[in-house]
Length: 71
Image 1 (cartoon, rainbow, N blue to C red):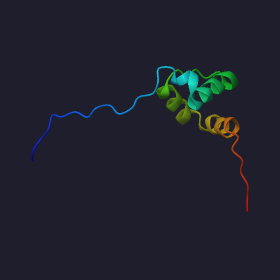
Image 2 (image 1 turned 90 degrees about the vertical axis):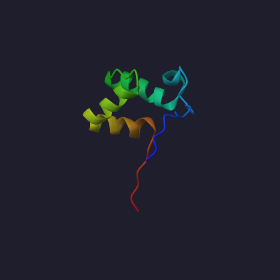
Image 3 (image 1 turned 90 degrees about the horizontal axis):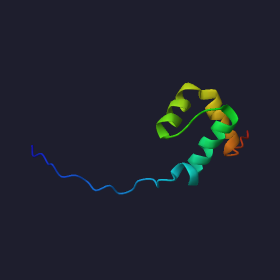
Image 4 (image 1 turned 60 degrees about the vertical axis):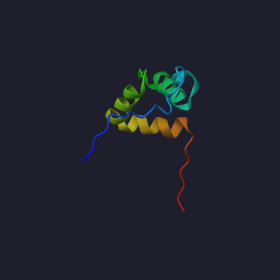
């Protein structure tokens, strides 16, 4: 089997101000405002999402105005 040492060029990375200019940043600010959760990066967001499931998912529903209905 042949091995290669070639690397792939980075195709995309988030902007430096991702937490200030994106929906995920707005969600992180809502978590801080409503629940006192300090979410400074994606790892912190992920950690909160798996340690406080009920609060996380309720904020998802509220923040993104998700509506449920039964048929």
